[in-house]
Length: 389
Image (tube, rainbow, N blue to C red; front, top):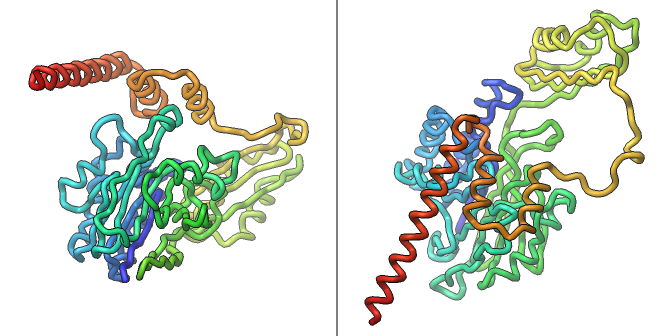
């Protein structure tokens, strides 16, 4: 039997709600998942993208990641990963750097064999404009009876609701040239699974809550593969509890009313998400924040919606609501732009750390690199032609 732990979307370095405590929570969740892999004595760990929350994680975040991965290395358990949309860079990836420490390997279209009977493959997150041109060809495994497991980082229907999904999993199976026995997926933070054209597919979910609506327990997946058969079970991680509080104010309600509403909840060491609704009162968001922290919450976020005009969703725009980034990528996909053009556009739009005064230099550098690569390809082609003559 081959045993593999599958985790995903660890988002290391995420200072959720601007909190250093939450950043540490993401590190601790990753550490707990790796500790479970060691205690389960698995044969390998696979990570299906968004190891880091940003393309430019801080040095301490990267160092903590490597220190955690050393636990696997010391236990002789390999760590294999792919690149997600959050931590994808235009050049060398963080997984390439971590590989130099001997604590991780990057999956690709060539088989990585575990115990001579399981072949692991990986395809990094693909932008919408590049989807149609992406090569899904996988190298054949050495043995015909090898169990083939493909890791992807993308939002796929039918596992993901249609208005969130980017692509159809059936299309992926049609474009892959070999018979894939299972699909280990990342990017969706909830745990979901199903059988797609006879192939088991699942999302392991994120190891920490990345949004307030992610209420289900965080999990990793333990895979047991024997004689070509897969058994998967979810292992729950112990993460910080989220508590949602809604306080509805009337005009006469004061600080005492807010304290009473907050006192009804057990907040010790929790992340408290507080929504203020109703009428405007002298009680401020800062007042509520202090009350919640005084009641023991480790982290607090207050959303003051008092005085806002209520509307009926039935009167609003109809159809699927998509993020701005997703709409932009869909429009770009229709323009048939060059690879360097889409690369520049994505870098400028998605790199939160790119200062305005650096944009010109970044664009110039990317174009110069593309020109260098293009001329190098032409030189190689000319040399090949001369050799043939």
